[in-house]
Length: 466
Image (cartoon, rainbow, N blue to C red; front, side):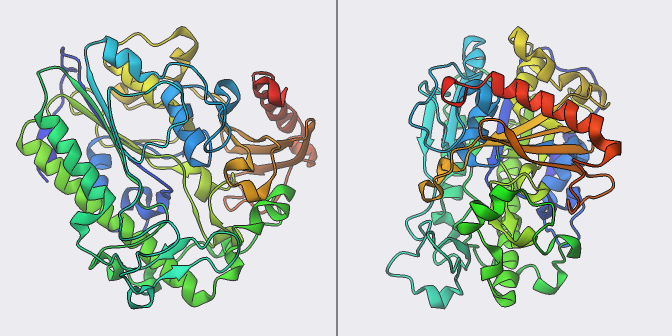
């Protein structure tokens, strides 16, 4: 990939930049070499990070799909926009920030795993597809014998999630490749206006079905998650054990299954990196990367039997922390890593600011554009993530759950309706979240301050959580 030749210093171009937003699902940071993984095979995304700006501590606004996507599209927290779980029955009738790009003369498209929870379409052109006809969320198609593809499934109830297996057909038949091909055609249909293209991929979300040879690319022996995080945390909030673990119990998998699950997951990320690298090469060869901001991020992370869990919906780091990379030679700094915790809710205000589009006054503080231009740390501000467990109705648990973070301190709280089940961790001293310091005298002031911030967010919530 010849992107390095474009990464030259200079002033930001005068014309409005194009935007390519590459968006994955259930994507852990430890699957990327640029985030320090020793077993990752991700040269394309690592190159973007090396030539751009990587946010080391980016936090999802919600560790579940629909609410995270809606928060990014609106710039508003779940409490502010009212979307706390997937497929909410009352989608908000509010504009997405992508409208401002349309008004500024952009062509916009959102292709792939869209899964937004809003009454108004965020993009002028939309195409939605989550998975291929060969592998559904819980089963391979009838013509494919799952035993022949080494399939690993969740052994508990109620969902037989596919956590690993080899893709049973030509990789060209995956939803991810189809999304990219549709994106190419949309670019070729351009009319001279700047473009805003979001390509949203199901991978590495379940079903984790990895095309060969990437299914065996990474040796299971090379995958070493931190030993301290391999079991349930003593600081686990009560709602995790009492509710979430009923459908996401990682201890139900055998060590052999866990090893396979991890190999297939990290291999699928390597395959995604491969096809994204091919896309970027294709765009570069045709001039589509000239004056183009490329941003890569994910809606949330996932568990791979660490913390004794599978899937997402927790505030532990593997679930709530996500990759977040910006690339714009001449517009943003190159080769920088920023440590300040940020929400990915900052994405659209940042892109608007960078493109010279006015950011709504109440969202201006979210823009990272100045920090990205200079390669300097952004101003520190509270970081939020929140959800309810209603995305999967069998849990039948509607209490709002919230995380608020300042620097290394992270408080999680359940509202019932008063705050309860408080957990405070200090990531600098306890990176694997084993100790609840909420009652430690040295942390009393911090706990009260963070709790006050969480209460203020609940004050903004829609009436059903009032």
